[in-house]
Image (tube, rainbow, N blue to C red; front, side, top):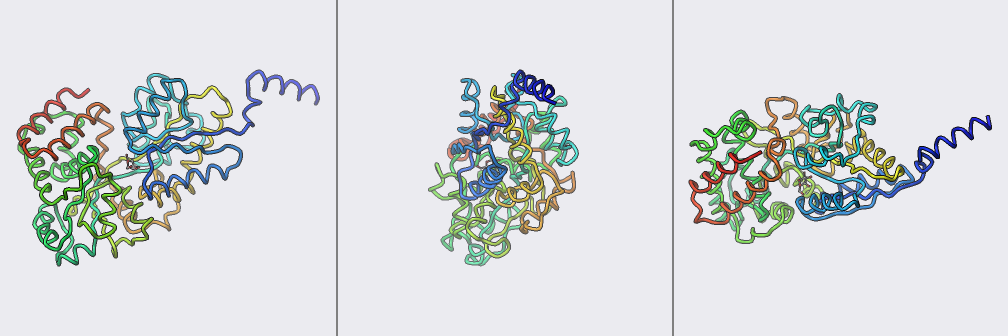
Length: 413
Ligand code: GAL
């Protein structure tokens, strides 16, 4: 017996596994700084700390681009965080190919992630060449508009049933002293709203042919001209304060009934949640396009940079497992406004907006793959800049903007 213990102890020491029992700090970099986002991320922190031993160390950096850049710098500088948030898709492809990430395959196989996570395009963001490099934590769709019910009541008009219908009703909102169209100033917000209008106007097949297969006849054609024209038509209904405004201050204009609608991903739902607002009473979540709602497969993943400390590595695996567990999926996604990545979770807390999303996602024909799966970070950045410029600079013609869009897509890798 003694001999056995000694042998096991020697082996454990040789493998460095004695340190595994040591508690570790896991620093997590994310960009969840709004009220709703903080309520959601604190679910992760609280649940992780409650497991005992290891500790969640929170590093919140405002703005997705800033947070991702900080993570990349830390990894390249040899001081990686324990975990970091990215959007599912191509944002972290160099980290995978460069061998910088902890391989989660054994854990994922044990917990059967490939079967429980749905739809398949969500797994595909982390399951690359047969290995799991990250854990998807939610499905966020861009294809929503958030409307203030009291604002529309005040203007004496019904909620919009299409973009054109909204543009027809917007003057009434304006007359009633309401900002018809709330939009913020960051380029990703502006291109995000443009993308929703584009998805609705092109339909899913043409959108895929354009953004995935780079079909230039669509990029150069009349359908895309109409998308640019429609987007420009919204401008007259936005307010002067939109420049530099962040997305959640913009959502707050809807929450406080100062504005009519905001086109924004369903993280906006978290803001209504923390403000105690009720869907169907205080606000409406319009799944877009209203006559044939779709959901896009955006969201968030966490990746775990390789760490030399075995205690940190053990804690990273523990955190990954916790994030995907059914209980935490239910608690986190209810606070976040997103949908869980698995359907075996208790959805009794789901509000009407989440129920709507869950219904839409059941049919694969309603799923719009997130453009970030197809476009590199660089291409996305160029598109964000172009669409933001088109939005703010009225002297840029539709023809100019479309020509620049074509150039970006032609050069896309
Ligand atoms: C997205 C992210 C969401 C939400 C949003 C605004 O990139 O997927 O979780 O937080 O940014 O911060």
